[in-house]
Image 1 (cartoon, protein in one colour):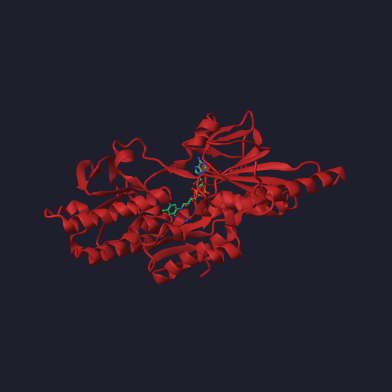
Image 2 (cartoon, rainbow, N blue to C red):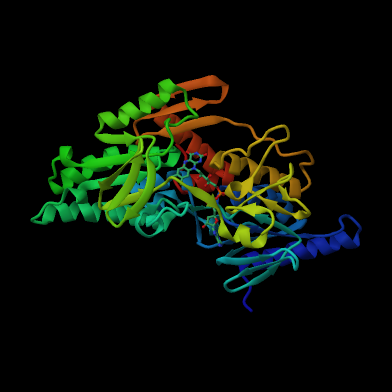
Length: 424
Ligand code: FAD
């Protein structure tokens, strides 16, 4: 079999390791398999690179695609404001000595045999890191999975952008002028939903100008069953976000139980009354769960694709398996509920696990909440970040971009960040 550069470098590292073992310097070279090249998987990899180069560990990274995508920017691609290539990083740029990348889909994790099955490979491991991320969850709402588009990954985001534009074009070119075609319903006004609505403010203007449509005719709804908007922010800030969207023609309906969806409508129940809203572009952001493979691998422990880890982010009873990112439900000692799943915690989990496997970290995982930012398009937003610093408007939008650039650096390196134009 032809050997890749990575395989040759790995063999050299293994050889060095064997020599060290003969000299009695180290005992074993751990075979570490990382599943998923999202935030959690890549920060784990970054933390292991030195050990891999030194031949102390052999690392295999498995990911469905040849690229990493920045999930925190998927709403921008979904609206059509940026291209998917702007949020993707080629994984081969991240491969270094002692690291092998396998582009394939994981289909099974066998914890008894310590094996990972992908569509084309069977991989054994000494240490496994599961960072397979999230999937949309529609909570069994009738017609939702079939009819509404989720902001789930790059392909799904591109589909939303294409559907939106196709519908505006259809309106402009058809005789009947069905207002449904220039209407959009977004189920869920959490961070992802609000950020997507913020992007639509800009995109709506652009599409109307491109297709000669009167902007006042466009209807965009943001719906949520929750009675309050963005509860992680102060009332002043969530009111600011709501006003920004409403001033730009977006209707926010809270306390709206979403009961069903058809190909062009959502049924909602507000104050006990049912109502149908119509739109040709239906988007679902109201629910996410951990990866389904988690439920199959850990039937006793995982719920909706998430597993309550130990304080060291391992699976109870399996010290050799770490769960990181959106597949992990981490409940800190003394707390009752897991932290919300975010890129921020995924990055910190990966950094912790990378350091732990390479022997640089022995304590428990501690999460440092650095605050939260909700962008409303590229020129507005709200921010409440570490140290009680608050910002709204343009400053908040810029702050978000700075945080994103820092996060990219944290999971890659300066050269890769620069090559991918992620340095501000
Ligand atoms: P992911 O980023 O989902 O990565 C998982 C990786 O695993 C992917 O590369 C995927 O292709 C791969 N994979 C999945 N299944 C398989 C398989 N079977 N085989 C091989 N590979 C597989 N968080 C914030 O902190 N701040 C924000 O502002 C923010 N904004 C958001 C906006 C949107 C629109 C969305 C959707 C989420 C946002 N989040 C935000 C949440 C954040 O993006 C997630 O918490 C984060 O992406 C989780 O990281 P992860 O590494 O666990 O998983």
